[in-house]
Image 1: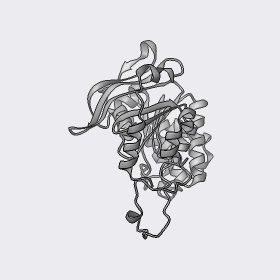
Image 2: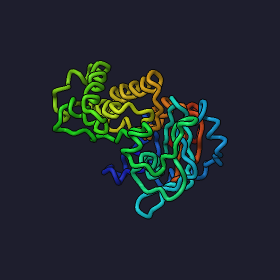
Image 3: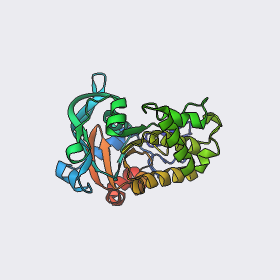
Image 4: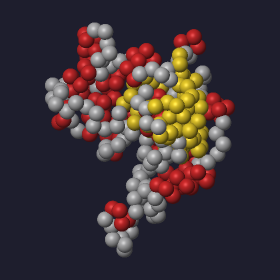
Length: 300
């Protein structure tokens, strides 16, 4: 992984170590996270609000304006702006510690917001959601958070895990009805509905995590590291599911993905973060074609 020196992984000095951190290929030179951060800072561009707006299809659905946020009294994000349109996808990449997951946490209400605003919706339905709790953001603004791996309840059955996704529903029967629709859509889960979640494969667990978030029928999915810990065949499956949710069900997706190549191939918009700021922004294709992004994150 980028940031690991040969000595930190137990390799002898004579071994030829390669890094495979933010991409599916490999590079001949291993550099530390601090060095990646330094080099990204050197190539950082002045990213304007107008530039971000130009990447949005139609009106912005989810907007962050001049956000400063972090944990306790520690500020991680500094004057962050973000815009993504309805039914669009945005992927955040960057070195470890850049603040990528902190952006998702701020949107969903998992950390402290010191200043700035977060809003969601279009036209008269647009609302300031900055200070809403996670439950309020899910129920009132239709924003769901799909956590990193290992967020299922292992002793519960697949069916019970899905029902838990509707804990904010006024009537439990509503969650059960939606769970049945999900089983119809994903036969792979239906075949395991009475099995404890702990027996699922990595790909099946990820599918369950995504499906559980769908029980509340959200408009926005915040997806944290969808490929983490998965074999390549399951990574492809998860991204196919996300593609379906965006393009066929109209979900807006904001994703953090350390597999930068996969994330940028998927997303309409890409941001590179460094030290809590946006260093580069463009379409997913523009970032894939950017030689500096390729050198630092794509193995090119």
